[in-house]
Amino acid sequence: MKIALVGYGKMGKIIDEVATKRGHEIVARLKETPTADTLNNPDVVIEFSLPEVAYDNIKACLAEKIPVICGTTGWLERRSDIEALAVENDTAFLYGSNFSLGVNLFFALNEKLADLMKNADGYSCQLEEIHHVHKKDAPSGTAISIAEGIFKHNSKFDTWKLEETQNNQLGIFAIREDEVPGTHSVFYRSEVDEIEIKHTAFNRNGFALGAVVAAEWIIGKKGNFGMKDVLGL
Image (cartoon, rainbow, N blue to C red; front, top):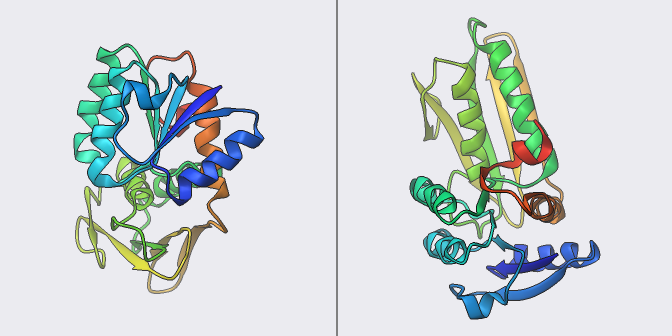
C-alpha cells in the first residue's frame, strides 16, 4: 500500500516507522498543504497536522478522490463539510480522536459504564485528561469523545465544560504536563465511594499502529467511518 503522510511532526514520523515495518511504502512526507503533484499518487492519506490547517489538507486530498485517515483534533466544527465532500468525491474519510486500539476499547467500556450509572443516585461524574505541554487544543479530542459517549446514555448531561461538573455540564479537567503522551480518566463519585476507569498511554506507538490499521482497512471503501467500524465495535 502506498501512503502519503500529511503533517510530518512527531506522530507522522512514528507512523512512518510503523507503516514501513508493516510493509507499506511512504510516497510523500508533507508539512505543507498537499497538491496532486506532492501527494505522489498514494492509495491513502494519513493526516496528522494542526487544527488550523487540517480542513484545507483534508479537502485537498478528498478533491483528488484519495481516502483520508485523519487524527488531527480541534477543527471539528467543519467535520460535516468534510464528510459531505467525501461522499461528493466518491471516496472515504475516517476521523479518529484517538487511534489507539486500547483507547477505542476504553470508549466502549466508558459507554457501558455510563449506561450502568444512568440511574445510580448520588453519583456525580468528572473527566480528566493529561497531555504533553505541546498539545494545542484543550480538552483533548479523546476527552470530548468520552464525554459524547456519556451523553448517549446519561440524560443528566448534554454538554461539557472545562473545570468542574455543574448541573447539565459535564466537567473536564485538562492538564498539561511534560511529555505525557495521554492519560484519560472517568470518575463517578458519591459521598461514600468512587468508581474510576482510566486509560494510560505509555508512548505514541499505539496511536500510530491504529492509524495504519485504519488505513489498511479503508482501502476500497466509500463513505465516512470511525474506529468503531475498523474494530467492529
